[in-house]
Length: 478
Image (cartoon, rainbow, N blue to C red; front, side, top):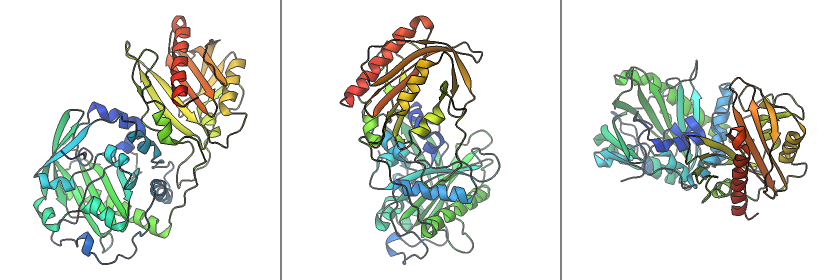
């Protein structure tokens, strides 16, 4: 069984294990990627090894961050307001966590595996080829049928051609239509794909090699299926997908192919005409992989499983310049995550969850490793001091509306730390919910967590979180 995933170009259901990927990048985990292709149709493409020297195609090998910068550069050219590509460090570090599910794909005929979409978990773990995932709206409100999901991959020219387009023209003619059986976490889904000729842009092909893919069955409600396109251009390999309603013929796939071909051309031109520059990452004693590794072997307060799908550098959005977003009202009694994370730019940040063993609930937590250049007063210490000095707190969550914490009570914990806090409070938003928040810092590493808890259980909850913090600090050698 080959470790590739076939549910991106097809519309097969996703297994439970994929929720880990969704926690990493949500829609970005859906971006498609394949293992090969040419231009099916009347005029066979030249093989990668015999293609004439291309003009206007990238010659440099791009890093993960540079590929993300290319995507974000095109987004800014299109006046997209939010960066469609993040630093791939989160996916890369997630791949090293060992929490991704077992996956596999088989095709009928078996030789058509060369055209099957690749599992993103495999892509994230493959350090021989650089990558970045992205999404791009094609007009109107963003949605499944108006948003192209795609992946850029880069390696030396011969290596990327072999990795993503390593097949013969004769094989393409035998795989004009094939079945896919994708297995994830023991669950198998099946669908059928058809190879299509890729459209021209103007009067020329988009790249050196290209082909389209169309899902023919099964279809979702409304006859919604997926159309894909794969393009090779020098050191750049582009893999795109778009959901299409009423996908009942090849002609219905053409508008999607045209949109994807246009985007592919823009990505290639951006890579060639505006080579990306990426700011260096601030020095840090821990990489994203190191932060994820701090959770290995660690369980929650009641022995429940702990997951951290990945870590990345705060404020690192390659190739995207945006106006500063409002950080909420300033003040000592404001608990603003946006302002807090903004003050920690350059730190390695890893979010995660702890599942409870006995109850259907969970704890959110985060681990932050500050750069080696960080100096007092540390943002964590400022946050902890504000909580100690305020009777009520105005919380401003990321992307959320402000809400007040009332009945704020401080809790005591025995964890030794350079700075710490533990509080219980009630939300004044009509829900009446009580929550415990706690955090601790040792050196350049801080851990914070939040979970729902009744006032009678608050101290026990805080003690359990402190024990969890201690396990993370122990793994860090602190």
